[in-house]
Structure formats: C-alpha cells, structure tokens
Image (cartoon, rainbow, N blue to C red; front, side):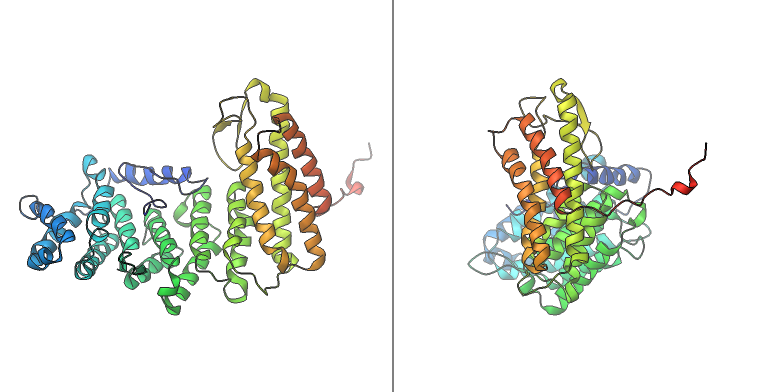
Length: 443
C-alpha cells in the first residue's frame, strides 16, 4: 500500500503510526494546529464556481490521453485555481479535507493515469504550487497546509510505476526535500511538521537512490547526518519527539545503502543508540544497522562494541526491573510506566489477561538488540566477537520465551533475571569509583 508509511492530517494528529514512539508526534502536530487558530495564515484564492466543476473532466483525463490533450488548459485551470489552493484553507471543516485533497492528486490522477504527458505536466504543476505553499512567509500558510504540501512533493516522481517501468523520484523534489532537512539545524525557516514531512519524503526517495545520481544522494546523506548529529532539540522541541525525528532521519539515511565516508552512517546510528532518551528508540536505532553493508568492514570496540554492550546492559536492567515489579505486583494488575515512554501502561495491554506480563516490550527490545549484534559481529575484533556471542546466548532463552506461549510469565521473569546477570558478567560496565574515605567524619 503506497501510503503505508506516511502521515495524514484529516484532523489534528496522526492516522498511521510510523514507529513505537510515534505517539509523541501527535502532541506536536496538535500543538501547531491549535496555536494556528490564534494566528493569521495565508490562504490562496479558490475558484468555487468555475474551476471546481472541472474535477470530473480531470478524472476522465487520467483514463484517456486523448481527453487530456483536448482539455489540457482546463485540466491545469482545475488544479491551479481550485484543487491546489483549496489545500490552504483554514476553516476547521476544510482543514480536515487537506489530506484527502492530497490523496486525490495521486490515487485518482497520477497513479491512475498511464499517460506520461499528463503525469509530467501535473508533476510540474504540483511541484511549483506545493513549493509556494511550503515556502510562503509573512504570513506563512497553515502548518497543516505546509505539511501536506511537503508530503505531496515527496510523492512526486519523474517516472511513475506502471507498465513495467521502474519508479524514479522527481529530481527537483529530492533537492527540495534535502534543502528543508539541511535547513533544520540552521534556524526556524521550516517548522517541525515540514521537516518531518521532508524526512518522510526522503525515506521514500532513498529507496530509489540508484536512480537519483551520486550528487543528489551525497547531498541527501550530508543533510540527514547533520540533523542526526544535532543532539540539542531544534526550535525548542520536546526532547522525546526530537529524538524520534532523528530516528526517522536515520531510517531514511540507511536506505541509501552506504556506510558513508569513514563509516559516518554507522557512527551516526551508534550515536543515536547511545544518546537517545528513549530506550526503545535506542534499540530501534541500533537495529537499523541491519540495512547497511558490512562486508570487509572493520569496526572497533570504542565506536561499536561498547555502545552496543552498554545498550545490552541498559535493556537487561530495564527488563529486570519490569520483571521484578511484575513478580511483586503483577498478580494485582498494577500499571507501570513503560521505560522510555510517558503514561501508564498495564503489563497485560494487548492481552486478554490484564495481569499478564507485557512480553511485546521485552521481545521488541531484545530482537532489535539481537539484530544489531549479529550484523556487526563479523566486523569486530575476534575477542570482542566472543563477548557478542555471550550476550546473544544470554538473550536467547528470553527471546524464545517471550515469543512463545509455553513459558509462563513467572518463569519468563526468572529467565530475565538470569539474562541480566549473564550480560553483566559477559560485558561488565565500567567500575564505579570508590568513595574517598578520608572525607568521612571521624565521629
């Protein structure tokens, strides 16, 4: 499904979750929508009487190239005078329609048509108009309009899939998306919703990097790396949400299929696996190494093994605490805050038993960590590989127990305790400095 990994704003908030931590984005988007009611935003004139009536003709053009050739002017008039400007309206009921208007461009016209002439012309029209919406200033267009406009840009192709031809992103769109992400750390020219929309677009474009050319992919990689390297949240964003945004940048980055100069892409993932506030985001960042090529690559302990071993210890400690809490309180159905996330979550959420241990958290974290360790193992020194094996061996019973139904919750909790001890023995953390006894009071 083409829209499976993007966001819709029919109403303030999100329709499809992109990752485990995506809920925090809802609050950000909602805040931008709500704050917009107290501000003035640019709305472009909409021809309700004339151009609006050409929608049926536009749909027919998508089905029949001859109809398009006979009605090219009316086709352009419909989009430029009604459809595109309608995406800038700010009335509450109109805001809810912006996402559908965006969908219609692709589902009912560009993806339905097999006419290269129509696709080429509408792609150019859409790119020009959406750029106007995204870049408008003093006043800007509404955040929902700008967000949907940048998503539209991200979906534009130079060559659309169909009739056996390969999909190829629209080069000016790739450049525009890259520019937005490149500017993200330089000021507030583009608000977070626009930056997020650009990241979603680049993640799609990166899938077809072979069709983009080396210059475009190099610029994309540089912009994404710069955003990931910026640890301090941009534009006073919430740290959790900003961490999630950097994770989306990393997801786009790895789709380029390159480790980067001096393993820059790999190093960026290790940075996220170390510095992200959320333990779940750290695990997901580590697992992204699975999409990178490590053949004949040598990695050192300081840059790779130590961050992953630290993550293993942190995951083991967090899971051990959850298991201990469950043993003490789980039978009473107590709720707990999921580590790395805000808000209460019952151990049995997603299960028919409200008192059951929340296995999916355990399984998700350990599976991500397992993926990362297996992927980089062969590139690490021989002695370090033995430590990796020890950690993987320690995790294996818990992964199997969490994934299956044969191990009861209390047995799983005990297995988690054993795993924690085994991981700490295999890859112990740095020794804690001893207290200075000379400063102890005499009496």
